[in-house]
Length: 382
Image 1 (cartoon, one colour):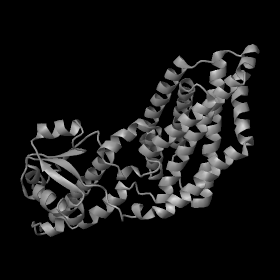
Image 2 (cartoon, one colour; image 1 turned 30 degrees about the horizontal axis):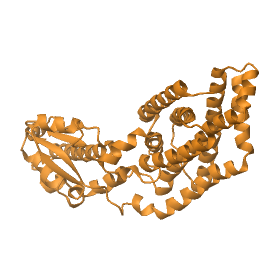
Image 3 (cartoon, helix red, strand yellow; image 1 turned 180 degrees about the vertical axis):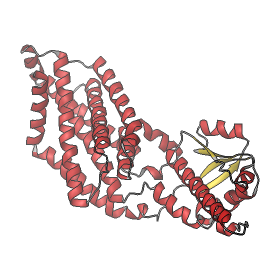
Image 4 (spheres, one colour; image 1 turned 90 degrees about the vertical axis):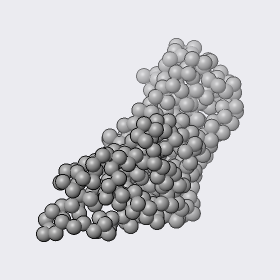
């Protein structure tokens, strides 16, 4: 009961603080509106994805592989985005796994022959760790190509003629870039993307209030009085952590509801996915709050440190600049932030994902929160 009492006390204190409410509720909504309007062209295709290279292993060198390499990947929009680099399979795998390339394409032997003989050979794509977004773009191109091949071959088999003009085969290729660009931009408007980015950033700001509150109570001897009432160190820390949890949950619910009402934001069709991901985000934030409490000596120092840390994480993690505009280095760096994994999870849900699509972001956030909390508890002095 004492743990819940401490948590509820902190939550009520937040709700009574009009300045805090204004900053953490009104400000995100204002920023969503401004950024949504000003950066909408980026999300409508007027800004390009930085060009990148993909390894190619062509073991076939036949008619269909030639169409893929020379026609599809050399179409105007795709060649401005992707450059194929011919390699042997071992080099392609090594360079992809090391992060040099986001993906490798392996066209198997007898690929064209198998298609002519009515079989359905599959192009192998090796995904790297440097950029899931770029690997996703390549995968969609390959999926559309193989779908086109299947449709044309079925039509040819049902026809009295067995001649396949290449122009018919790659008829869909001019449409590929538009679908790829929309997929690369997560198929969201600027307002939808920044609803996620700003809400995550301000949840972090709210979480940092918890670290400051711990140090204020220590400086004002409130903590000593609580301990004199037989509240143990564990109860106090759990109560404070739960308070950040409650406060973050209230803020998240309010902002999601208002963004739905004011901007028409749809947060997806998976309530379970939203619930689990949100708990993971708030848990990671709570852990970070404990860590900052253990580092900072005073409440004012905690305030300054938290402000700098949240802004840096938001800048690097995608709250301020869209994830899809990041180069390889920034894409990798962003993965050490809470923002990146939260944005990745929420945008996947908003783009039609389900509980499965937020599994990895949630696991990473929980691990982050546990690591922050374990480190903070080890060095926290009350």
